[in-house]
Each structure stands twice: as structure tokens, then as C-alpha cells.
Image 1: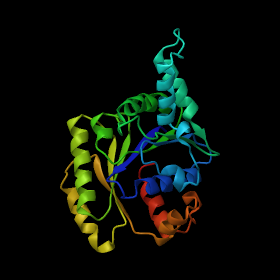
Image 2: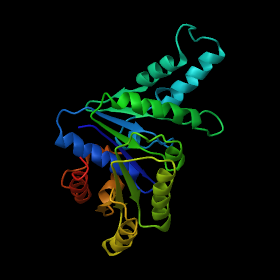
Image 3: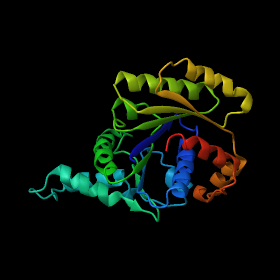
Length: 258
């Protein structure tokens, strides 16, 4: 089994939280499995959600900043290619947790640009994915991740929307941009997060109107005060009680993917 699953959607819809719930599900379902988490969002949240403090120098952005500094100081060996050094730095950025590995993208280099890090990330996904059975990616909210074909090897794309016009609009644009740049996924799953029961039909109709057999409505997860409280006080979301209603629903939905 090899899966690369990317969570995407508008900022604030709960992508990171839902990814951690999938991680919790996978760790419970498979006792021995190689899992890599890639936090590709410059506004990184995964580490916070699992109670792990990560410094900038430990991220890909930090490694690339140091690499750039070495180039400027002419401290790069002439007999080693830059690609080899970059790959080595990326592997050095891997943070080994007890049951999975974590890689954080970090912020970009100057002027808020993430271009070069996105280019490295494309190579990273290609190289690292071969070493893991499941890779979970927390994609950035912007459409650049897809327009640059960063997610070209993703098998399952999970587009998360909250009950807002903006959330559904971003879902539509991600689908459009993915098709425009010829990104192909085995499955695209639409997941409604924090949806009240009386609003399910709106998203259901929108997904039904897409008329592509690989685009499927995964389901809905209701708002959880328990998860909100854990987020607010900084508790490890992997410690969410197994009988949590939101988690029980998430498990049923994720079983359709993995």
C-alpha cells in the first residue's frame, strides 16, 4: 500500500486538524507502518497540533537559508553537486517522532517568496515518498501549490470546505487549476468540516454538479467543542479521546480512503 494524501482548501477550514485526525486513525489501524507528514504550509500548524516545538533552522526554509548563506560564503565543496547537498539538507530536516516522521516547510526566503522551496518540495516528495507507505501533506491555502504542480504525485486529494461561500469557491478553483495544469489524482475527496446537518444539501448539490467520477463527496464532520478546546489550550490532538464524536465520524470517512 502506497498513498500520498494531500489536504487542501481555503485557509481556516480545518485542514491541519483533519490531517492530524487521519494520522491518529492510521496509527491506531496500522501498528507498524511508515508514515511521513509534510507540513507544506508556510503558516505551519501540524507541530502545534501535536505538541511539538520546531525551530526555523529545523525546517526546509531554514536549511535552504543556511545553504544560500554557504553559497555566498563559498563554503560549498566544488566536487559535490548542489542537488546532492540540497537532498542531504532535506533529509537532515526530517524530524523523527516515535511513530512517524515530520517535515516542515517553514517560511520562504525574503519578500515572502516560497518559489525555490516549492521547487525543492517537488523533488522532496518524489524522493522521500519512496521510503514511506503513507505520506500526508498539509497543503498551503494558496493555489500556487497546484499551479506549480507541486502535488503531481499525490494519489488522493482531500479538499476541505467549511460552510461558507469562500470555502466552496476555493474548492471549485482548486479543481479548476488542477485540471488546467493537468494534475491527475486517483481520487479527489470533498470533505465538509464543521457543517451543520441542515446545510449538508448545499455541498452535496455542488459536488453532484461536478460530474466527474473521480471527484467524490467524502462526507461531513460536525463542529467539535472538544477539538476547539484542545487547540486553544495547546493539547496534543493525537490524545483526543477515541470516543469523540468528531473522531468517530472521521474514522468512518477515512476508511474509504485507506
